[in-house]
Image (tube, rainbow, N blue to C red; front, side, top):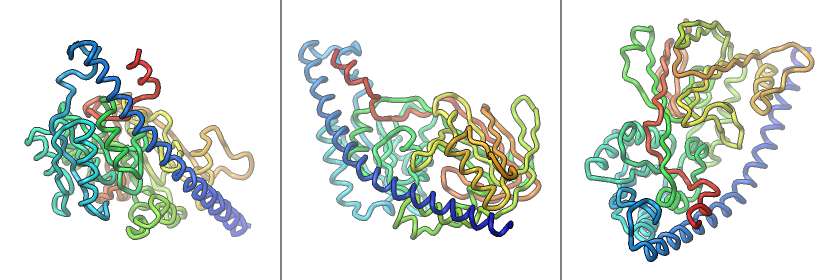
Length: 393
């Protein structure tokens, strides 16, 4: 009976995954064309409005007639991960042409290396006087660029070119189209967003003294980090984020471990868990919302502590992700999912667990200490719907 239940659960999960994948592929192609047209239209309309405003106001800088001198861009830096683009020369030309035509600003490219995947290049860009630093790459590149810009007045933009592109998805930056993403960075609005910080170690003392590491999307402890570690890099290049599904199959049958969560009020909560997720944003590829209360500018982290037994238990967790109000109506409860909304958290387990930050796997640890830094990153995001009408009024 147990084997039959296991086979039925696995079959159900596989069928659901295949259906979702096919639907997402179709929607991505349709959505890409709509985003390209919308971005180009917004850019054209924005410059028409600015030109009319300048003519009628004589170039006043009171904020009502277009951008002030403080908002103009003179030097745009692009921190580029060349491994994410097949033809970097073509990318250089396209981005330079867009910036020069729309903003008239100077463009400088800083390519990352294996030895320095983004931090040094961003520091140099800031030292060179960049008004806007654009991270062109995956979530790892975005994370390292943000680690330098957090707490400064320098604007940050994103040209997503990774597997998950989770931050870009959550702030609605165009995907799979570098030109549209660059237009969004040039014509968008500034949003002061939160960043998360994580310290890890093999003891509480080691975690407290460890260097803090930034995350903008989700940091994780356990099965999610295992899934990322199991995912084949070549498969990620071929089929994108869907590759994580195949990597995740190996984590389904793992065992939960004892986890203790401590909140800022010093209360402690014991769990049996396969994974602990710390979310600054909550939307996943495919449109799934794992953390509905994880908002990028609310000054809080949403924490999900999830545990399950076998494939049947995992299917119950997956069902709750799709519909948080859904609970098993028959059979045993084989999964648990607890949530916290907090400014910080300490997580402890007696067994070392792998750790990931925005999809980058780190070392194993038994202790995690996470905090949130509210509104310290000045992120350029696409103009909100309805704002164009306000400009024209």
